[in-house]
Image (cartoon, rainbow, N blue to C red; front, side, top):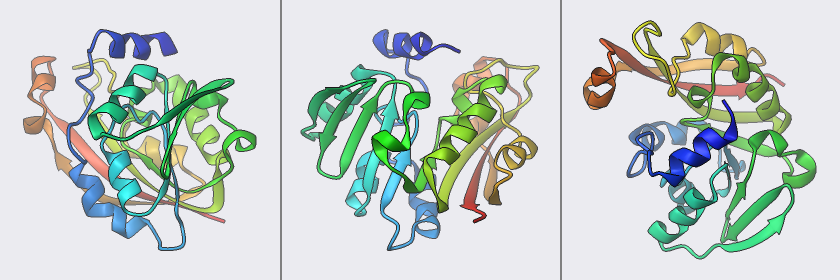
Length: 218
């Protein structure tokens, strides 16, 4: 899946994947993940998620990575936050108080550019990627983390015969395999199809959302 696909989705406002409000699962489980002395948070493929603002309000230094400049500017406008735009190849950056957007390809982000992170939050990055891209995504994510990093991952599972993503189904066994270098604990699994009726219209008869705690095995 090429970057232009997602940029176009934002350009034509086909953003059904955007969740209004702060994710209730983040509110519920982030306190179990974040430690007081671990403050830098990486949020890949963040869109214009209000989760960014919530993390900043909890005292974190937040870095969001997003392909669409439109999404980043929409976040600033909707949240009433001033972000200063700069051209820092290969990214456009938007910086504010304890929040930085890197607008560009996540795979171009390196520790030389951004340093390392103690924490990460993945609500919609892994499930936005097709099967062949997911191992590379996880390897690249790992390269940006400290040896004791912790993260919160929200996954999605359904019958792939009934619907083709995105969002893609990523079964628990695949998540555990991809994050083999982490201690992986499932915190919650529940049937979410009633909350997502548009997926029923796309042919799904069941859909599960799961929440995982990931801790690097140093």
